[in-house]
Amino acid sequence: MLERLQRRIRGGAHAVPRDVRDQISAERPFGPETPEEAAARVTDRNAALQRVVVHEESGAASPSTPVRPSSPGTWSALRPSSVPRLVLVMIGLAGALVALRELRELSSLVAPVFFALNLMITAYPLQRVLVRRGAPKWLGSIVAGLAVLLALGFVIFGLSYGVAAMVGELPKYDDQFTALYNQTLAWLTRLGFDQTVLVKALKGIDPSSVLTVVTNLLSNASGVASLVVVVLTTLIFMVMDAAQIEQRMGAARRSHPSFVMGLESFAQGIRKYWLVSTAFGLVVAAVDYVILIGVGVPLALVWALFSFLTNYIPNIGFVIGVVPPALLALVEGGWKPAVIVVVAYSLVNFIIQSIIQPRVAGDAVGLTPTLSFLSLLLWGWVFGGLGALIALPLSLLVKALLVDVDPQVRWANTLISSRISDGDPLPAVPTPESV
Image 1 (cartoon, rainbow, N blue to C red):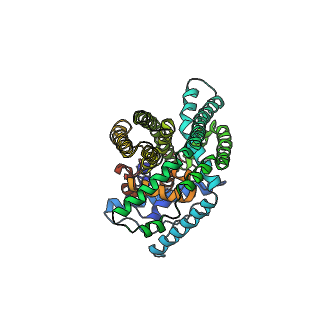
Image 2 (cartoon, helix red, strand yellow):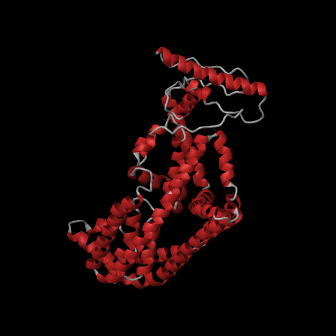
Image 3 (cartoon, rainbow, N blue to C red):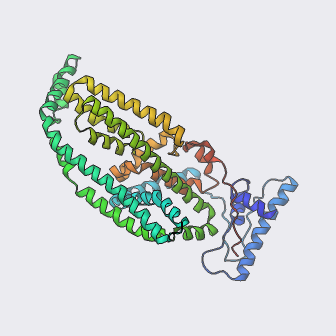
């Protein structure tokens, strides 16, 4: 009976004061523990459980007097804080802001490392499949790492091809962009806007200089090269660690089951997110390519690849992906092909990502649309362009570490998670006695 009650309290399904919960859920302290200390810790825990049982049977309120540890080797009971909650919230927000600013300073290191971690987690099931079929763990890890490198190489090759094609093609449309600029200015003037004000507001926009800047940015690959080096180096070391990751997680689960459960939930969430986004992104890119070929938009393969990459950016990725081909269709053939491109892209995005994808793969994000958009803004500010790509996995990691593993704040999932059931209490996790 005491063991069942202990599991319910640890899982958050039994309401008791925090000090009593801490005493009941006390785990073995870090470092050596003498038999006397172990016996005292078990005695304190059983006494706290017995007090809960007595109060339940008598119908009294939950025990509120903290249970004091009887030896220095046990965890001390936490007393209710006398600091106002508003002060604690302000301190927490200030600490979070400082941490975000520090992460921004280290963005060139942290973002590629986290991106490599995402790729390795996504490919890790390959290692499990090979091990179950009798392959050594080190071989399975190498195969998973090679799969990641192959996918990364495909993306890099596609980007290189797209950049080279745009650098060679965009300067040809210098005159058309200049004419479009003048036509837009004249159209706004006919609508009643003052031409002097418009010219003053748009004087910094020179179509020729804009194309030159875009071309220079596309041809500058030094930043991408440094990012790729960090990602590849990190992947090499992660492949070396992958062979023992299950043993390490199993050892950590024996002492901190809730924390490991949160990490496993995070890994499953981002693995599903990347796989579903990749599969349906390929479908969207293929359909967009057929549309662009039919309309006659130049660089159709480049824009299809661009739509595939922007598919990983939540909420606004579709908008980013449709602007370049629509603009090029406008200067190449006029308003009619541009409108066709925008309408076709919108229909494809709505049908595939809003109707077919939820029915086939369910919700692969795990966050509400509003929180997904705020995640994009926040992590894009912290880590730049790569931050927009890994915005949702970063938010899922924060949610897993701060919300999912803590029974007292797990209820917040009902507000931030796309699945209301994520706010339910954690299932009871049987943990062996650590004495």
